Image 1: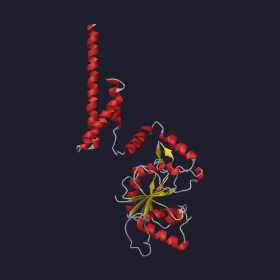
Image 2: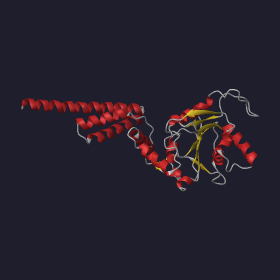
Image 3: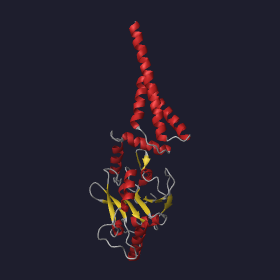
Image 4: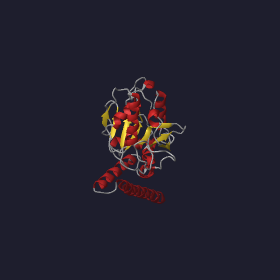
Length: 305
């Protein structure tokens, strides 16, 4: 699915005392990088805000004047895009995931709302003007949304003509006239960091027992610049077998060697995920044979004694 992404990262962060919110980290990664990781396949990614280091290349722009609010910022980002579908995100969503983004991008293709007339000068067409996330409490999130560019540009132009400026206008003034589908949020996908308490809660949540391993693996993959489905159970089983059947230091060294072998296989054309699985099976079988041999030797020694 072809789309462009606009990430709004130029807010004043008043509830954070003016801190550089997009650069604040959760799980060792900047909030902005976490959001960018949720839309890696965007054709063009535009960040509206001050330039900063990011994990992947993006285009930069600012609303004029800076600090003009979300509608002005969205207009500035939209001017740098060309796709018919535009993903719009705020830069403070530590738990936004690719599945949620995909659901937003697919939702506008649903049939238009019954009884809704085409806008003046616009032919009636199947589908909606976009889709926005609805959080678990039933609140709409217009900055976690996918919009069709044409109706978005039309409504922005109408607002500019009506008010003479976009500065200070609320997002509801823009979205009120759009036919938008709603996508129900996963429990944490819409969680944003507006306050220091929010940031502390996100940092605590990411270390919870049920999610810490998945979050850590995702962070490592992003840091290393790899996109690979990891069979966590298989690798943990391998580490266990190597530790118990050989020696405890064998666990990290074995998983390192499996990764190296998988990378070598992938370089020759093998599927990376299959290469990891195959290397893991071979190493696990070897560890089990090693353990069986040690057990047999121990039994023989005990019997002869």
